[in-house]
Image (tube, rainbow, N blue to C red):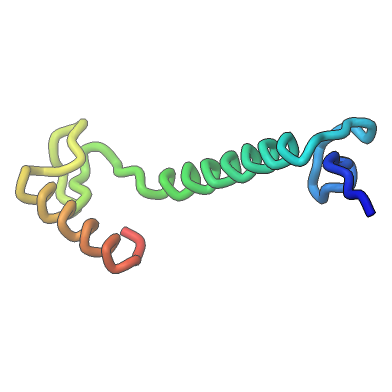
Length: 94
């Protein structure tokens, strides 16, 4: 019994390939890897969008600071960074 090394991408769920396009196993794996990477990057961008800070408001104490500043002073920045680092080590979101 022989096994074909080409895969019909039209049979792959969620594929956007032409029905007559045939890919080798390596080509299909490369394409699926690219799709997985694109999906992971999209999820990361979505998560990062929620973490954006409003300039002029301290990310640590929520006090008003300089118009383009994210923290009101070095102490607040250090405290916030330490707290975020601890949460990340604990596997919790920052």
